[in-house]
Image (cartoon, rainbow, N blue to C red):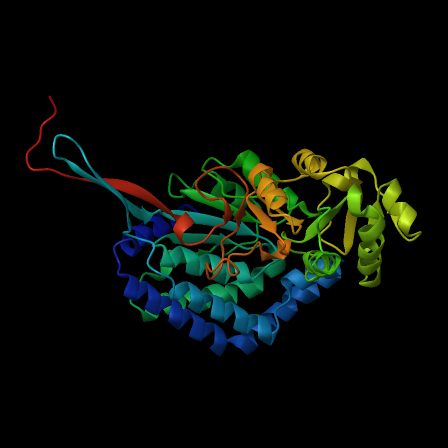
Length: 413
């Protein structure tokens, strides 16, 4: 692990000085390598899936792990999208002149070496690797044992792209062991050779990372996302957005976990929304008013409001008004993604102003919490902290900055 860190630091220093054209070439070559290895990649993934099923993993977990020809193509396209993004390195972010004639520029630079720890999603290997390379960073990837074989194939493709462009392959490395001790070493910073850690996985992994990391962390602990149906919501729109927010993919962090319905429209909107969810195969756990509209609704407990199900389950309750909806989200939410459905622009503006989450939507699904949907090509993760990276972490968020001072002989009095 110490050797991996040293090689990553050396590669990061070299990559930071390369041209955007070279980094773009490397990523386009990596995308081609992913396509060329599609059969081998899917075969390796099938072995990962077999192990996951033997371990008794649920279908939501299997869905996150599984690669299909369409998903492999989507991974390759995401790498190409990242390749085509504007160069995030060397941007002049600000320029100002001091009274003494000094001209000072704030310029974007790579962060350095980024450690990414992930579990079941093999696409993270390609997404994280390509984003780091585009931003001039080196990446040390630690895959979960569930996706280890799939990640190996994807990292091999990215490394081949780097080599084809004449760039250091060590800019993207996969920890070659499944030993959990490797995670602890990575969190310790590998003798100062890791600058940032990004965890992508379940609550247990993220909690451990946030508790043990000796370097900064970009992460979210839970994805407890809400859909609030306001008194001025169009019912057809609310139904359509809610079903997408909950059921499009139930295992992703942007999936809605709680439905809030304004009391002013509970008589007209609550029953149709609950019925639509149940008929779509979703279990609904509700407060007394929600239970009253359909006998299939199970009673919600206090714990349900704090639960990220990652499954076809949703909690639901009636709230008195916009203020109570905001209070509920502040009390039980995880500062990830929330959505208000309303035709009232002032109510939407207040919701977006007062809800303290990384992503706050109006009349749109919470499942847009995704770097690709933001035009970032991909994401290395979703951050819910208050550092410079918040929401989807793309190439711009994987840069820091330095100051360049231009003078003509000034000295400080």
